[in-house]
Length: 342
Image (cartoon, rainbow, N blue to C red; front, side, top):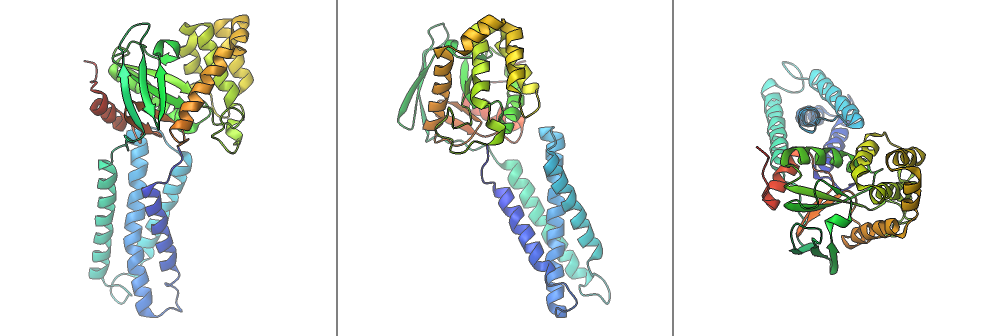
Protein backbone atom coordinates (compact mmCIF):
# COMPACT_ATOMS: atom_id res chain seq x y z
CA UNK A 1 0.00 0.00 0.00
CA UNK A 2 1.32 3.41 -0.93
CA UNK A 3 1.32 5.66 2.10
CA UNK A 4 3.30 8.45 3.66
CA UNK A 5 6.28 7.13 5.61
CA UNK A 6 7.70 8.93 8.67
CA UNK A 7 11.11 7.41 7.92
CA UNK A 8 10.88 8.59 4.33
CA UNK A 9 9.97 12.10 5.46
CA UNK A 10 13.00 12.18 7.77
CA UNK A 11 15.23 10.98 4.93
CA UNK A 12 13.96 13.74 2.66
CA UNK A 13 14.58 16.32 5.40
CA UNK A 14 18.11 14.98 5.94
CA UNK A 15 18.98 15.14 2.26
CA UNK A 16 17.54 18.65 1.96
CA UNK A 17 19.71 19.70 4.92
CA UNK A 18 22.71 18.02 3.32
CA UNK A 19 22.14 19.88 0.05
CA UNK A 20 21.79 23.14 1.95
CA UNK A 21 25.04 22.56 3.80
CA UNK A 22 26.88 21.70 0.58
CA UNK A 23 25.95 25.13 -0.78
CA UNK A 24 28.10 26.73 1.95
CA UNK A 25 31.34 24.73 1.74
CA UNK A 26 32.77 26.43 -1.32
CA UNK A 27 35.91 28.59 -1.12
CA UNK A 28 33.87 31.79 -1.57
CA UNK A 29 32.02 31.25 1.73
CA UNK A 30 33.47 32.73 4.94
CA UNK A 31 35.55 30.32 7.00
CA UNK A 32 33.10 30.31 9.91
CA UNK A 33 30.20 29.45 7.63
CA UNK A 34 32.19 26.71 5.92
CA UNK A 35 33.15 25.24 9.29
CA UNK A 36 29.51 25.21 10.38
CA UNK A 37 28.42 23.62 7.11
CA UNK A 38 31.05 20.89 7.39
CA UNK A 39 30.02 20.23 10.99
CA UNK A 40 26.46 19.62 9.81
CA UNK A 41 27.74 17.39 7.00
CA UNK A 42 29.71 15.26 9.44
CA UNK A 43 26.59 14.58 11.49
CA UNK A 44 24.46 13.89 8.40
CA UNK A 45 27.14 11.60 6.94
CA UNK A 46 26.92 9.36 10.01
CA UNK A 47 23.10 9.37 10.04
CA UNK A 48 22.62 8.77 6.32
CA UNK A 49 25.43 6.24 5.92
CA UNK A 50 24.51 4.35 9.07
CA UNK A 51 20.83 4.48 8.16
CA UNK A 52 21.57 3.07 4.71
CA UNK A 53 23.49 0.18 6.29
CA UNK A 54 20.68 -0.43 8.78
CA UNK A 55 17.90 -0.53 6.17
CA UNK A 56 19.99 -2.77 3.92
CA UNK A 57 20.47 -5.14 6.86
CA UNK A 58 16.72 -5.14 7.54
CA UNK A 59 16.03 -6.18 3.96
CA UNK A 60 18.70 -8.88 3.90
CA UNK A 61 18.31 -10.42 7.37
CA UNK A 62 14.73 -9.66 8.46
CA UNK A 63 12.56 -9.20 5.38
CA UNK A 64 14.89 -11.55 3.46
CA UNK A 65 14.07 -9.82 0.20
CA UNK A 66 16.09 -7.07 -1.45
CA UNK A 67 14.39 -4.10 -3.10
CA UNK A 68 16.65 -3.24 -6.05
CA UNK A 69 15.79 0.46 -6.13
CA UNK A 70 16.21 0.69 -2.36
CA UNK A 71 19.57 -1.08 -2.60
CA UNK A 72 20.77 1.37 -5.27
CA UNK A 73 19.65 4.35 -3.18
CA UNK A 74 21.28 2.99 -0.03
CA UNK A 75 24.52 2.21 -1.88
CA UNK A 76 24.69 5.77 -3.20
CA UNK A 77 23.99 7.04 0.31
CA UNK A 78 26.84 4.98 1.74
CA UNK A 79 29.25 6.21 -0.95
CA UNK A 80 28.21 9.83 -0.37
CA UNK A 81 28.59 9.49 3.40
CA UNK A 82 32.02 7.88 3.06
CA UNK A 83 33.15 10.66 0.72
CA UNK A 84 32.03 13.35 3.16
CA UNK A 85 33.83 11.71 6.06
CA UNK A 86 37.02 11.33 4.03
CA UNK A 87 36.97 14.84 2.55
CA UNK A 88 35.95 16.69 5.73
CA UNK A 89 38.60 19.31 6.65
CA UNK A 90 39.34 17.93 10.12
CA UNK A 91 42.57 18.20 12.06
CA UNK A 92 45.41 20.59 12.75
CA UNK A 93 45.32 23.69 10.61
CA UNK A 94 41.95 22.69 9.07
CA UNK A 95 38.50 24.23 9.46
CA UNK A 96 37.31 21.80 12.13
CA UNK A 97 39.28 20.66 15.15
CA UNK A 98 39.31 17.02 16.12
CA UNK A 99 37.31 17.66 19.28
CA UNK A 100 34.48 19.40 17.44
CA UNK A 101 34.48 16.71 14.75
CA UNK A 102 34.17 14.07 17.45
CA UNK A 103 31.19 15.86 18.95
CA UNK A 104 29.41 16.09 15.58
CA UNK A 105 30.06 12.43 14.80
CA UNK A 106 28.82 11.44 18.27
CA UNK A 107 25.66 13.48 17.65
CA UNK A 108 25.19 11.61 14.39
CA UNK A 109 25.53 8.29 16.20
CA UNK A 110 22.93 9.35 18.79
CA UNK A 111 20.47 10.33 16.05
CA UNK A 112 21.16 7.10 14.19
CA UNK A 113 20.57 5.11 17.38
CA UNK A 114 17.26 6.89 17.89
CA UNK A 115 16.22 6.03 14.34
CA UNK A 116 17.13 2.35 14.75
CA UNK A 117 15.44 2.11 18.15
CA UNK A 118 12.33 3.87 16.92
CA UNK A 119 11.91 1.54 13.96
CA UNK A 120 12.72 -1.54 16.02
CA UNK A 121 9.99 -0.68 18.53
CA UNK A 122 7.45 0.36 15.91
CA UNK A 123 4.28 -1.67 15.87
CA UNK A 124 2.10 -2.30 12.86
CA UNK A 125 -0.71 0.28 12.97
CA UNK A 126 -4.12 -1.05 13.92
CA UNK A 127 -7.20 0.88 12.85
CA UNK A 128 -9.75 -0.27 15.42
CA UNK A 129 -12.22 2.52 14.71
CA UNK A 130 -13.09 1.36 11.23
CA UNK A 131 -14.59 -1.98 12.10
CA UNK A 132 -16.52 -3.76 14.80
CA UNK A 133 -16.56 -7.53 15.03
CA UNK A 134 -20.18 -8.55 15.54
CA UNK A 135 -20.28 -12.35 15.60
CA UNK A 136 -18.78 -15.65 14.50
CA UNK A 137 -21.02 -18.68 14.75
CA UNK A 138 -18.03 -21.03 14.71
CA UNK A 139 -17.01 -24.02 12.60
CA UNK A 140 -19.43 -25.80 10.32
CA UNK A 141 -20.75 -25.55 6.74
CA UNK A 142 -23.20 -22.82 7.79
CA UNK A 143 -20.60 -20.73 9.62
CA UNK A 144 -21.41 -17.02 9.60
CA UNK A 145 -18.95 -14.24 10.39
CA UNK A 146 -20.44 -10.78 10.64
CA UNK A 147 -18.88 -7.36 11.11
CA UNK A 148 -19.65 -3.71 10.56
CA UNK A 149 -17.41 -1.42 8.52
CA UNK A 150 -18.17 2.30 8.58
CA UNK A 151 -21.89 1.60 9.02
CA UNK A 152 -21.87 -1.09 6.34
CA UNK A 153 -22.82 -4.55 7.60
CA UNK A 154 -21.19 -7.63 6.09
CA UNK A 155 -21.78 -11.33 6.69
CA UNK A 156 -19.47 -13.95 5.20
CA UNK A 157 -19.59 -17.72 5.17
CA UNK A 158 -15.95 -18.76 4.64
CA UNK A 159 -17.18 -21.98 3.04
CA UNK A 160 -18.63 -19.87 0.25
CA UNK A 161 -15.43 -17.96 -0.54
CA UNK A 162 -11.93 -18.98 -1.61
CA UNK A 163 -10.05 -19.70 1.60
CA UNK A 164 -6.37 -20.40 2.11
CA UNK A 165 -6.38 -23.03 4.80
CA UNK A 166 -9.52 -24.29 6.46
CA UNK A 167 -12.83 -22.36 6.53
CA UNK A 168 -13.38 -24.09 9.89
CA UNK A 169 -10.18 -22.76 11.46
CA UNK A 170 -10.31 -21.34 14.98
CA UNK A 171 -9.81 -17.85 13.59
CA UNK A 172 -10.69 -16.49 10.16
CA UNK A 173 -9.06 -13.39 8.73
CA UNK A 174 -9.99 -11.60 5.52
CA UNK A 175 -7.54 -10.57 2.83
CA UNK A 176 -8.29 -7.89 0.22
CA UNK A 177 -5.83 -8.04 -2.66
CA UNK A 178 -5.07 -7.63 -6.35
CA UNK A 179 -2.87 -10.22 -8.07
CA UNK A 180 -0.95 -7.42 -9.84
CA UNK A 181 -0.29 -5.40 -6.68
CA UNK A 182 3.42 -5.66 -5.68
CA UNK A 183 2.74 -5.17 -1.96
CA UNK A 184 -0.02 -7.79 -2.09
CA UNK A 185 2.45 -10.24 -3.55
CA UNK A 186 4.94 -9.52 -0.77
CA UNK A 187 2.22 -9.95 1.85
CA UNK A 188 1.21 -13.24 0.24
CA UNK A 189 4.73 -14.55 0.90
CA UNK A 190 4.31 -13.58 4.54
CA UNK A 191 0.93 -15.33 4.67
CA UNK A 192 2.59 -18.54 3.47
CA UNK A 193 4.90 -18.27 6.50
CA UNK A 194 1.88 -17.54 8.72
CA UNK A 195 0.22 -20.75 7.61
CA UNK A 196 3.38 -22.74 8.25
CA UNK A 197 3.73 -21.21 11.72
CA UNK A 198 0.15 -21.62 12.97
CA UNK A 199 -1.33 -24.41 10.88
CA UNK A 200 -4.62 -24.43 9.03
CA UNK A 201 -6.52 -25.55 12.12
CA UNK A 202 -5.77 -22.25 13.86
CA UNK A 203 -6.07 -19.75 11.04
CA UNK A 204 -7.95 -19.57 7.75
CA UNK A 205 -7.55 -16.73 5.26
CA UNK A 206 -10.55 -15.72 3.14
CA UNK A 207 -9.22 -14.31 -0.14
CA UNK A 208 -11.30 -11.40 -1.44
CA UNK A 209 -10.06 -9.89 -4.71
CA UNK A 210 -10.62 -6.13 -4.98
CA UNK A 211 -9.18 -5.27 -8.41
CA UNK A 212 -7.34 -1.96 -8.55
CA UNK A 213 -9.04 -1.12 -11.82
CA UNK A 214 -11.84 1.45 -12.43
CA UNK A 215 -13.53 -0.89 -14.92
CA UNK A 216 -14.83 -3.01 -12.03
CA UNK A 217 -13.89 -0.92 -8.98
CA UNK A 218 -15.55 2.53 -8.90
CA UNK A 219 -13.30 3.57 -5.99
CA UNK A 220 -10.30 3.69 -8.36
CA UNK A 221 -10.07 6.92 -10.34
CA UNK A 222 -7.17 6.16 -12.70
CA UNK A 223 -6.15 3.00 -14.50
CA UNK A 224 -2.48 2.23 -13.96
CA UNK A 225 -0.62 0.10 -16.49
CA UNK A 226 0.09 -2.76 -14.06
CA UNK A 227 -3.63 -3.19 -13.35
CA UNK A 228 -5.04 -3.24 -16.89
CA UNK A 229 -6.09 -6.91 -16.57
CA UNK A 230 -6.85 -6.92 -12.84
CA UNK A 231 -10.62 -7.34 -13.21
CA UNK A 232 -10.22 -10.34 -15.51
CA UNK A 233 -7.39 -11.86 -13.47
CA UNK A 234 -9.59 -11.75 -10.37
CA UNK A 235 -12.32 -13.58 -12.29
CA UNK A 236 -9.84 -16.22 -13.45
CA UNK A 237 -8.87 -17.06 -9.88
CA UNK A 238 -12.49 -17.12 -8.73
CA UNK A 239 -13.50 -19.24 -11.72
CA UNK A 240 -10.93 -21.86 -10.72
CA UNK A 241 -12.42 -21.96 -7.22
CA UNK A 242 -15.98 -22.26 -8.55
CA UNK A 243 -15.03 -24.97 -11.05
CA UNK A 244 -12.93 -27.08 -8.67
CA UNK A 245 -12.17 -25.83 -5.16
CA UNK A 246 -9.42 -28.38 -4.70
CA UNK A 247 -7.36 -26.63 -7.41
CA UNK A 248 -7.64 -23.09 -6.07
CA UNK A 249 -4.46 -23.18 -3.99
CA UNK A 250 -2.51 -24.63 -6.92
CA UNK A 251 -3.59 -21.68 -9.06
CA UNK A 252 -2.88 -19.29 -6.19
CA UNK A 253 0.70 -20.58 -5.84
CA UNK A 254 1.23 -20.46 -9.60
CA UNK A 255 0.02 -16.90 -10.19
CA UNK A 256 2.01 -15.44 -7.29
CA UNK A 257 5.12 -17.12 -8.66
CA UNK A 258 4.73 -15.34 -12.01
CA UNK A 259 6.69 -12.13 -12.65
CA UNK A 260 4.94 -8.82 -13.20
CA UNK A 261 3.32 -7.77 -15.45
CA UNK A 262 1.00 -10.77 -15.40
CA UNK A 263 -0.24 -12.37 -18.59
CA UNK A 264 -4.02 -12.82 -18.70
CA UNK A 265 -3.70 -15.39 -21.49
CA UNK A 266 -1.19 -17.43 -19.47
CA UNK A 267 -3.44 -17.25 -16.39
CA UNK A 268 -6.41 -18.58 -18.37
CA UNK A 269 -4.29 -21.35 -19.89
CA UNK A 270 -3.11 -22.39 -16.43
CA UNK A 271 -6.66 -22.30 -15.06
CA UNK A 272 -7.97 -24.46 -17.90
CA UNK A 273 -5.17 -26.96 -17.35
CA UNK A 274 -6.15 -27.27 -13.68
CA UNK A 275 -9.95 -27.56 -13.89
CA UNK A 276 -10.68 -28.32 -17.53
CA UNK A 277 -11.46 -25.86 -20.30
CA UNK A 278 -15.24 -26.29 -20.34
CA UNK A 279 -15.65 -26.05 -16.56
CA UNK A 280 -13.43 -23.00 -16.42
CA UNK A 281 -15.14 -21.16 -19.27
CA UNK A 282 -18.56 -21.72 -17.74
CA UNK A 283 -17.43 -20.56 -14.32
CA UNK A 284 -15.63 -17.47 -15.63
CA UNK A 285 -18.80 -16.30 -17.39
CA UNK A 286 -21.08 -17.02 -14.42
CA UNK A 287 -22.89 -14.43 -12.34
CA UNK A 288 -21.43 -16.02 -9.20
CA UNK A 289 -17.89 -14.98 -10.16
CA UNK A 290 -19.01 -11.44 -10.95
CA UNK A 291 -20.83 -11.26 -7.59
CA UNK A 292 -17.67 -12.30 -5.75
CA UNK A 293 -15.72 -9.48 -7.38
CA UNK A 294 -18.47 -7.02 -6.52
CA UNK A 295 -18.43 -8.11 -2.89
CA UNK A 296 -14.70 -7.58 -2.52
CA UNK A 297 -14.94 -4.19 -4.22
CA UNK A 298 -17.83 -3.14 -1.97
CA UNK A 299 -15.84 -4.01 1.14
CA UNK A 300 -12.85 -2.13 -0.28
CA UNK A 301 -15.06 0.95 -0.72
CA UNK A 302 -16.40 0.73 2.83
CA UNK A 303 -12.94 0.71 4.37
CA UNK A 304 -12.29 3.97 2.56
CA UNK A 305 -10.45 2.69 -0.53
CA UNK A 306 -7.33 2.99 1.61
CA UNK A 307 -5.10 0.97 -0.70
CA UNK A 308 -4.09 -2.65 -0.98
CA UNK A 309 -3.46 -5.07 0.57
CA UNK A 310 -5.72 -5.12 3.62
CA UNK A 311 -5.92 -7.80 6.31
CA UNK A 312 -8.66 -7.62 8.90
CA UNK A 313 -10.46 -9.54 11.59
CA UNK A 314 -13.27 -8.12 13.69
CA UNK A 315 -12.20 -4.72 14.98
CA UNK A 316 -8.59 -5.16 13.91
CA UNK A 317 -7.38 -3.87 10.55
CA UNK A 318 -3.85 -4.46 9.30
CA UNK A 319 -3.24 -2.07 6.39
CA UNK A 320 -0.52 -2.62 3.83
CA UNK A 321 2.39 -5.02 4.00
CA UNK A 322 3.99 -5.45 7.43
CA UNK A 323 7.69 -4.61 7.40
CA UNK A 324 8.60 -8.20 8.28
CA UNK A 325 6.97 -11.58 8.96
CA UNK A 326 7.94 -11.19 12.62
CA UNK A 327 5.81 -8.05 12.91
CA UNK A 328 2.85 -9.88 11.41
CA UNK A 329 3.35 -12.84 13.76
CA UNK A 330 3.38 -10.50 16.76
CA UNK A 331 0.15 -8.78 15.74
CA UNK A 332 -1.72 -12.01 14.97
CA UNK A 333 -0.69 -13.66 18.22
CA UNK A 334 -1.55 -10.60 20.28
CA UNK A 335 -4.87 -9.81 18.63
CA UNK A 336 -6.21 -13.26 17.72
CA UNK A 337 -4.92 -15.35 20.62
CA UNK A 338 -3.17 -17.91 18.41
CA UNK A 339 0.21 -19.52 19.08
CA UNK A 340 2.90 -21.21 16.97
CA UNK A 341 2.48 -24.92 16.42
CA UNK A 342 4.77 -27.14 18.55
